[in-house]
Every structure is written in C-alpha cells, then in structure tokens.
Image 1: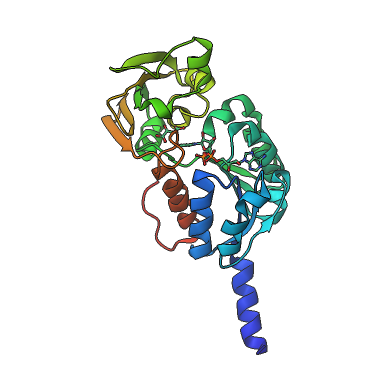
Image 2: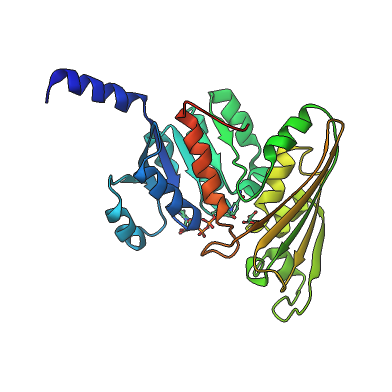
Length: 281
Ligand SMILES: NC(=O)C1=CN([C@@H]2O[C@H](COP(=O)(O)OP(=O)(O)OC[C@H]3O[C@@H](n4cnc5c(N)ncnc54)[C@H](O)[C@@H]3O)[C@@H](O)[C@H]2O)C=CC1
Ligand SMILES: O=C([O-])CC(=O)C(=O)O
C-alpha cells in the first residue's frame, strides 16, 4: 500500500469512535445496522449477545463484522457502549465502561435509579452516562426549563394491552387486562414507583424525570387502553420560563413494549457525536 495513503487511513481510523452494542434485540439490531451502513466518524467495533447462534445470520450479513464479546468486556473494545439489553444487565454493561472513562448510552433508563452510584463512578473516572430521548419527546425543552424552576411535570401514558402484559405491577396486583373493553387506569404515582412496577414499559417516565425534577417529583399515570394501537405519552410541564404540553404516539416495534422511534433516537444521538452540524440540545 502507498505509504501516504496508509498514513491517511490510519489517521482516519484513529479519529473514528468505536461503538459497541450490548443486546441485539429490537433496538440493538437497528443501531448495529445503521452503524454498519455508515455513521460519520463512528465504527461498530463489538457486540454482546446472549445467544450467539441466534444472531449469526444477522452478523454475517453486516459489511464489517464486529467482535462478539461478553457484555462486561465491551468497554475495552469501544469508546461508546450502547446498552440495549434488559435492565437487569445494566450494571454489568455500564460499570466496566465508565470505570475505563468511556461513554455509556443507556436505554434501560429505569434501571439507572437503583444503580445511581454509576453516575458517581463515571464522574470519578472521566466516563459519561448518556440517556437518549428514546421513545419520548422534548427532553431538550425539559432540560432547558430545569435550568430555571420547574413547578410540575405530569405524564399520562396509554398503551395497548400487549405493551403492558407481564409488568410486575399488573402481576402482583392480579389485574386482568386481557379482557378489557375500555381504558383502565392501572397506576398513579411517581416516576420512581412507575419504574419499579413497569420496568420494561416506562423507561420514558424515568428519562423525563432525570431531565426535569427527578423521579420523586414527576407524576405518572398509566392506562391500559384496548382502544389504542400505539404507545401514547402525553406530558404537561409548568415552569417559570414556559408552560408546554407534548405528546407522542409511538408505533410499537416487533417488541410491543418498545416504540420504533427508540432506536432512531439513539441513532440520531450517535450521528451527533462527530457531525459538523448538530441541531437540538
Ligand atoms: N429509553 C426508552 O425510551 C426505551 C427503553 N427501552 C428499553 O430498552 C431495552 C431494550 O429494549 P428492546 O431492544 O426492545 O428489548 P429486546 O427484548 O428486543 O432486546 C433485548 C436483547 O438483549 C439480549 N440480552 C439479554 N441478556 C443479555 C446478555 N446477558 N448479554 C447480551 N444480550 C442480552 C436479548 O437476547 C435481546 O436480544 C429494554 O430494557 C427496554 O425496556 C425500550 C423502549 C424505550
Ligand atoms: O418507555 C418505554 O420503555 C417504552 C415506551 O413507553 C415506548 O416505547 O413508547
């Protein structure tokens, strides 16, 4: 190879941020595909999967095969580790990454509340924990309002039955949602309580709370609604700088609990890492 060309490609490679993905489910596969197709300044360096055989075809079809590593080794192989596994795996993914001063993008945000010391660990080691807007909307405005004073944040979520089935709150309280004919209010409380009762269904409430007034002051209502086909979130914020209402109707992905826009939100966040033009906070 021409030496000058080799130096140029080596320099390009050294400027590239390596991204690893933990969990190749509904969200992770879409992010891996987007990285493989090309995101400016980023390469997909590694993935962690629970069952490698299940993902072999997907991995073979990628243009550049990433390494397949155990979840706790992704931080060694990447500058940014994207967590998109069940929240039970959050600590095993994020801790080794932030200890090495790497960035961890966390989608299982609900799981952060019981592992909040990871934020201190990241701070102590020059790492970062980044929560994307995910299946929500307007966290830029909530962040901005929180610089001033936010008086209240209220969120009402309506989900189809399949988007809520199996949630611990429903199981523990023996609530039959399978035969509902009209909307049923399942829960009213704080974002922290919502994350406990609905760990795989209400990450959005926790993301909203972390952007604004925290998990104990963010009010959440959850409805099981047989009349909707989308995951619907409506938010009202009252602050000294502004009053705003936002709502989003998410088309469920192949995982009915997860809106399609979640993976796109992470891809948009990744695109900003090295883009010459960044829009939105
Ligand atoms: N922040 C947000 O707005 C949203 C967050 N979420 C959360 O994102 C996370 C991922 O969601 P989906 O992709 O829909 O879930 P999914 O169930 O489709 O995918 C999770 C993947 O993780 C894999 N996995 C499980 N244990 C693993 C291990 N030990 N090592 C490696 N891989 C492992 C599973 O095999 C599966 O492929 C969930 O915690 C979900 O609650 C979902 C929607 C919105
Ligand atoms: O927050 C979550 O876990 C998922 C959700 O509500 C959505 O995708 O709309």
